[in-house]
Length: 176
Ligand code: AMP
Image 1 (cartoon, rainbow, N blue to C red):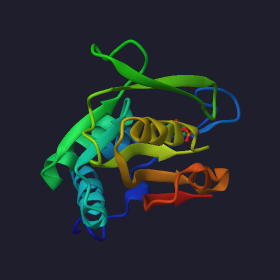
Image 2 (image 1 turned 45 degrees about the horizontal axis):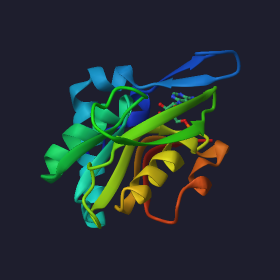
Image 3 (image 1 turned 180 degrees about the horizontal axis):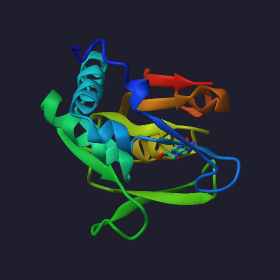
Image 4 (image 1 turned 90 degrees about the horizontal axis):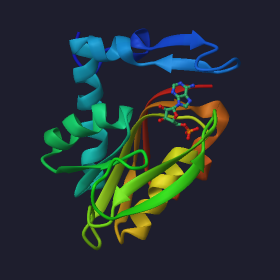
């Protein structure tokens, strides 16, 4: 089977009540363990995102790093991380956001983005959209231009994409 016909959904495992009751956790570890599946994700992101002409891929800690770094290498551009508090050593911008479960904060190095650089934000999954919207704010605060967003999984029923700025959104899989 070629990367373009590979059924990614067969490699996503649904775990009820993790990490807390009421959450149906979409587990990507079977996808990561499968060489065809992993290759198909990077192929599909590269095909869909090339036209967005990004200068940088921004990966959201930590599962955004897993997909963002090989995508950046495939597109021949650099990778920058948005990290949990206290991990980045130089001066940072910081944004707080609400999760489907709890709240959190992410940081970006102040010098990670040169003025006007086009930044594509990558994460494994969009749920309520709070995480990706906070990172979009960090990109704007840094003087970058948002090229778009890429998610392996979109939980469409939670409406997270409506919280994002009006730029292209690439979702490889959608669940209601
Ligand atoms: P949100 O800010 O609500 O869009 O949450 C997105 C982030 O939380 C992503 O980094 C996901 O990895 C994680 N996440 C939220 N909900 C789930 C879920 N149901 N299954 C797996 N990961 C999730």
